[in-house]
Image (cartoon, rainbow, N blue to C red; front, top):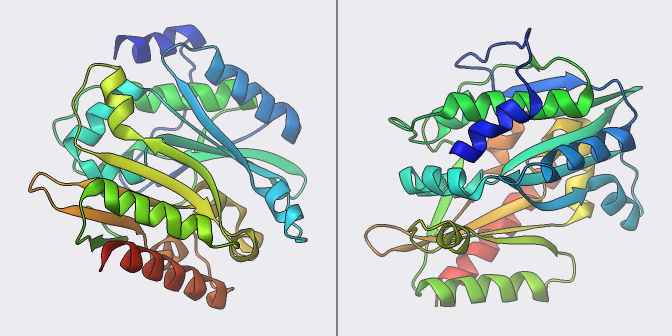
Length: 294
């Protein structure tokens, strides 16, 4: 946590930030720079801090181009402080579905913007009661976004969310490793799907001297399905590609959890591309059930 606190001093304390409120689910800043420069600045901000790990950068617009589709420039960077993230997952293992942290850089007409999920949104969706120093995380995210964009971070959009709302979990009949292997194999064998990242929360915790039950995040997707949805609202690119969390709970039960596309549609006010959303939900259901059942 000392490393995370040092992040604040590294960037300095900025004044004039909007204060998060309970129902503010997105924080946003308009960049003074072009898209490529903003992405580059954000990458530099992340890499300059030893407390943070940049796990992956997913370029939505380039993935759309490979699928012969058009999408305004958008890239999501997935990063985090392994110690801080592990402590949060210790408190609520399902938080591993929304961790590591993410920031989306995207074009909005002639503007470049940076957005991320507010800490208050995460506090509402997961059981972080009693977790100390989340305010440092909140301020650290604001400082990073502001440093990358050169602008002030503002609130954008209200969304009420209850604990674990919008998360679907499939109970597995297999042990953790078998479940994970079956799921990975199913994704890899589907030529329409690409695995973008595989984040082992258990190993990340182990590397910083913390204990965690087996917990692993698989980030994957199909640009042919995700791109039309992002065409309606670029900000949903913050939650794309889709994710599976494979985890073993305190009772030894192995589960596969994922975000319900209908929940994401409500969160980002999606009213079009219903067919793609239904296809996405069916694919997630089939993959998780086939991996979890004999």
